[in-house]
Structures are given as structure tokens and as C-alpha cells.
Image (cartoon, each protein chain N blue to C red):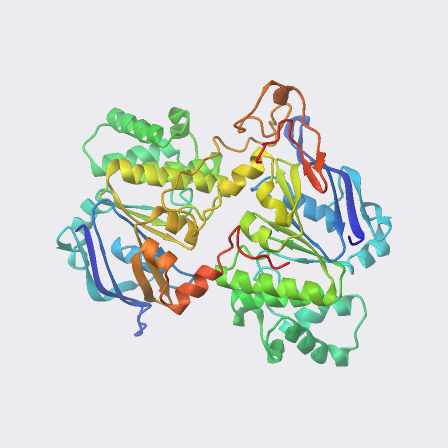
Length: 318
Length: 263
């Protein structure tokens, strides 16, 4: 069991909206991230996963709650201390085309973080850029290219090279492979896993594809309407017990399933986060909703070792 | 046979080398064909060529498309108007984007129905309501009064499908109909596509990059890469027993729940 590198405690983020109301994007989120592990955060659009990531990246301060990292609550950092903190957490974005300055060459793009933190001499930039490109399995002579001269997969590799330039402890990936084709996606995931083995990097990986996340995450957290519904070890995903996780598992179309097999479809739509149902947020789509679900919000409790569920009546799968 | 595509090649602009070439397939009434491939493989170009809506100076440079015995490549614009939207219609990736954001959905839906039929406004309105109800949309009256941005992605897609099936087309062309949707909504829409094609007896060509969806829905499958068909056949055969190296690598890179884990 490795050490806890980051712990998110009771994180809540509310955005004010018209009429004095608040939109709760993240509601009382608590979880730990262990060193050298991948935490996959899964959920549909509007479930608050990007808001959570922005809080972890210290790009947005939460309404309440703490994020402990390197012995400090990073949400309270200011000024130079806050800037220095960015050295240890880096990010890979969804759209690698939008993440680069189109007028900069790859060499300068990759080494910009090092220059910002004054960790490199001007004369070393070229060799460092070549070294980083080799680490992400790209030819070193790409240093003279511009972002538009590359394919989407190659650009995403450059984004990863830039993220590892500072040798960060944590890399946050926001849908880093969603814009890519399946075969490219596969190679990027293999690259991320390889870098993790070599450098012991911790990933927080946001994704909407449960099947993809299950392939390389040590822990998987499922979010719905700003709440964490279930947290489970990656290899135990099949034994998930929250009705929402079960529904997500069933919604994955597999090439291995029999054709025209009956698919169980979750009824209804995600309610507006401004108009949350009372009690359990998932109750109006849940197939085994009962009286208690409307009255009380289920607590996020541990039902087995390392397996947390926020549900009054978790599904028995045995 | 409903549709017969023979040796189709499409070029864009003055470009001499064709973007897609040598595409052959046949489609029977009521069958579902899926075209899969990665971005830039030419899968959308194929169905756009069938509907004769190729963008940017694209044109069929070789081959022919036979739909119900007529060669579509030689039709004039006037005959196209009686086919497009009536015998053949298209479902887009984002049905919200195909509509005008400053008019209500009802206005555009009724205009569409009246363009293709002699119905008066009241009858067209009732037909629109009927089709929306068929797509399991609650409160169809309200939806006709709304603008596209007031609906969620899944609802917009349902409206798009309702419009596409209004005249009981013989052929539906679906261009990545579920790619912009969340997984649970995708499951709903896929279920409804299955339901309407089985219910109306329409044939469908679905273009998708999601092999799971393709194998669930389709009877036949075409795998495209770089403008060429690399493999085609009955879906079960292609998925279970792929022959071409490209199909094999494509199938092995699809994330699956039971696949080996990297960590």
C-alpha cells in the first residue's frame, strides 16, 4: 500500500446564479490519491468532474473544503507559493490543438515550463526538448516543427512531453484521449502507463468512457450531479454496487456482446443541477428507488475495504 | 435490392486523386449497414455522396449509385427534391446544428412537412406531434414551441430522428448519430434507432467510429481506411473473425471491460 500523496476533504464548489440561487457543481467530495497510482474519475457531462479537476489544479478556489498536497492545503496558497505549487501538478488537456500557441515551435513549447521556473539554460533547451520527445516516443527532430504540422495523436504526445518536463508528482488529464481515434487512444494510454512505471507519476484521469478507465486505473470514482456515487478498485469494477455504476456498465456497447441482445436503458434524463431532487440525487432515474431515497441523502460509506458507495440500497450482485 | 453502390469514387475540387475509391456495397430493404473507420477514412463522404450533398466542390468521379433502379448520379436538382427528405433522409451528429437557432423547432418542422406534402398547417402540426410522440419525447407541444438551445443533446437528437422519419423514408442515413452524447443517452438513442428501423421497415446506413454500437446495430459492416474499403461482410463474421490486419488492429484497440488491464 503506497503513501497518500493528495487528499481531497469535503470539497464543495458552488457557483452563484441568477435569483440568489446556487449551482452546486461539487458537493462534499472526499477521496485520497495514492502515490504512483491512477485515479479514474468517470461521469456524464455536467457531473462536476472538470470543476473538481480545476480545484485540484488550483485554478478555481472551492467554496469550502480542503485539498492537502505536500503537507499543505493548496486551496489556501497565494502568490509565489501558489505559483511554485504548479511545478508539482501538471495538466494534459482534451484538445491538443487548442492547448498550444500555434506560433511556437515544439522545442519552445516543451521547454516553456522549465523556462518559467528558471530550471534550464537557454543553451540546453534543444537537447532537453529532444530528450523529452524521445521519452514520449516521437522522433527528436520534431523540435523544429509547429503544432499544425503534426497529427492529433502526435500533438497529444507533445502535450504529455510538456507535462512531464517539470517532473511533476501529479498529472491531471482532462478527457485526454476523447478527441482521438481508438487506435491512437490505445497508444496514448500505453505511453501514459509506461511513463507511470518509469517515473512513478500519479495520474488523475477524467474520462466518460468507463471501459477505457477500467483498463488502466487503480481506483475508479463515479460522479453524478456533483456527488461521488461510488469509489472502487479498478480491478473490482465488475462488482460495483451502485445502481448508477451498474447502469453505466450496461450502457457500454461491446464488440464482444451478442448482437441485438437486450440492452437495459436508464430512463429519463439528468436533472438540472439547479433543480436537484430531494434526498438521493439519482433517485428519479433509479430502478429500485424506495421511500427513504426521497427523504434522506445517502451517506458515502465504506461497504467493503476500499469500496465506497453512496446508496441506501446497494445492488446485491452475488 | 434498395441501394447498389458500384465502384464509387469521389474527388473534391480540382484534386485529381480521389478521396474515396472502389467502394462497392449492396443494401436490401430493412437492413442496417454500418460503416466504421477512423477520422479521415472517407466514411462520411460515402453517405454524403449517396444523398448528393458533398461539400466543397465534391463530386462523384467514377462509378454509380443505384437507388430503387434509378441512377442517382444522373438526376437533376428537381428530381432530387422529391427524393431527398422523403425517400431518403439523414440524421446528423448534432441535430441542433442542422436547425436555425432563431426559429422555433415547430416552425421548421412544419415548414419541412409542408415542403414535401400537400398537408395544411394544422395537419402538419399534428403529424409533427405524432412523430415526436413516437420518439418518446414528453410534452411534444412544448418541444415544438422551443428553440434548439433549450433542449438537451439527447432531446435534440430525438427531434432530429423524428424529422428524419416523418415521411417513412426507405433509406435513413445516420452520420455519427450518437457520438456527441453521453453513454446512457447513447444507449437510449441506439435503442430508439433499432426500434424505428424495425418498426418502419426502413433501411439504414450508420456511420460511426464506435465499433460497439456498429456491431450491436448492424447486419452488415464495412471497414474503411484511407478512402478504401479494407473489409466488408456480415457484422458477425467481421467482428468475430476479422481477416484484414487493419480490422484486427482496430478491434484490438477498442476499450473493453474484460480486456487485460495495463496495471
